[in-house]
Length: 345
Image (cartoon, rainbow, N blue to C red; front, side, top):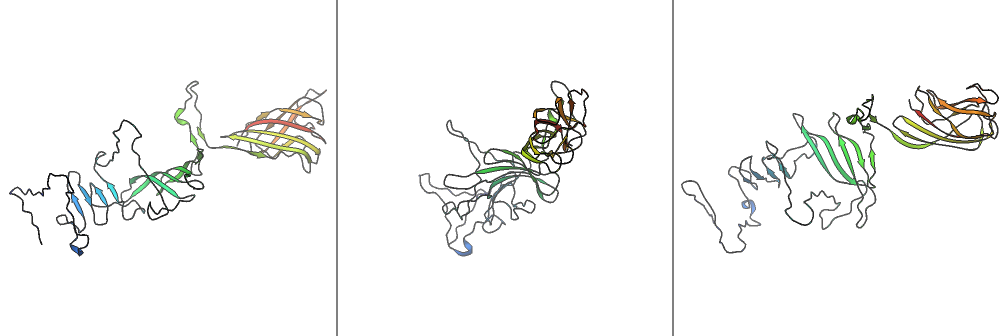
């Protein structure tokens, strides 16, 4: 049977449903071979088009919903067949999407990006550590393809369990290549981590200093770390105790050390070697805050480093009032404790 609709002289044609409440619908047979088709005039079997300003609304034969275009786009080497929902336009309004909740209670709308290892939500399989949970791509045309300029992505960051879903965020930017580089991560514990692709934190936007008006050559904070180092005196020395710790912020290094010598070995007995970073050629100074049983009695004892990984000790010994860096300091049973600040090379 064929149903033909003839319009009036203006071309207007309509199908009217009853005003009574009910299931007013047009149903196609579920199984009728190639005849089970929706056709646009001159279009492709299985597709539907609503033409309007800006390119209209298209539901194509592969199940994609397209607004403003009839062509699914590709993104570089990704999404080779295009996305299943696409909005395209020639200005920011026609290429945008809005999610608005008009309600005087509750939360606002949300955008959900979800991941399961199963085939559907009803047969979902739990994700595991490292699985991607979703990402937002920011793309630009390079003349031939859309390339990713920046990415915000999320991934599982720990062990998954019932009502337990640890996740992290990664921020990536493109420094001038085909693909972005991971720069900053917010871990599942909330810690902010600068990744290997991040050169540091740039403070240049707040320079010159608001109070002094001074500027500096480099406002990039590119290092922060804490650790341990091993202070060493001479060669072959045995120790009752020795330990060292350090904190580095940018190029500024602060070291702490504690040494108790059991038997003094050979070599220079007025140097402490093993600093965690070589010093700049600008002298860094420090004064030991505790010492006993040294080789001489000192009115004053200090330490400095100059373009090296060691501390050189200097001072004056009673009754000699001359400052000297060639004095003899350590011997069997000597103890020295102190802190030292210097500028790394």
